[in-house]
Image (cartoon, rainbow, N blue to C red; front, side):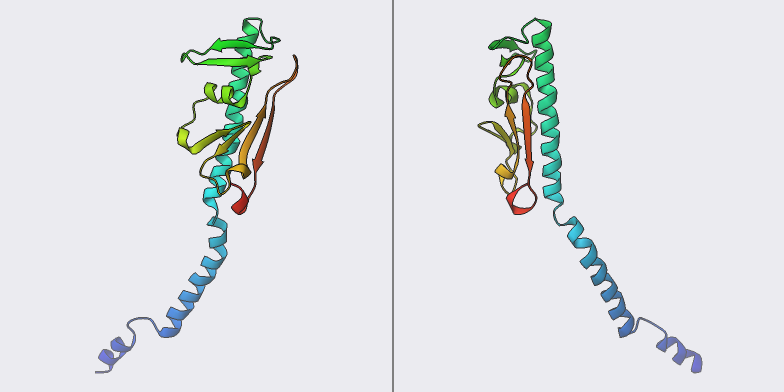
Length: 157
C-alpha cells in the first residue's frame, strides 16, 4: 500500500517548478527579443550596401569598355552592352543614375526605386533614408561619387 501511495505523489511537476520555468523563459525572451526585432531593417541595409557595390562594379565595367575604345575622357559617349542595352557615358562613367540603373540588373526589380540621383529600397520604412545617391564625374580624370544613406529605425531601412 505504501509503494502505491509513493508512486501517486511523485508524478508530474509542482506549481512552483512550472512557475520557475515560465519565469526563466520570460527572462530569456526579454533579453533575446530586442536583438531580433529589426532583422528586416538590417536585411534591407545589407541589400543597399550590396547595391552600392553593384553600382561601383557596373561603373567600373562601363569605364573599362570606354577606356578600351579610347573614350574615357569623352563628355558624351554611348556604348551598347552585350544584352543590347545602350548606356550614355560621361567621362567613362554612367552619365546619370538612370543610365547606371540600365547597366545593372536588379532582382527583383520591384524592390528598388530610381528617383532622381538616388536608388532607393522600395520596401524600406522610409525610402529616402535607405538609398545610395550617384553623381557622375564632372570632368575627365574625376571619379563618380556614391553617397549612401542607411538610417536606422522608422526613418530608414
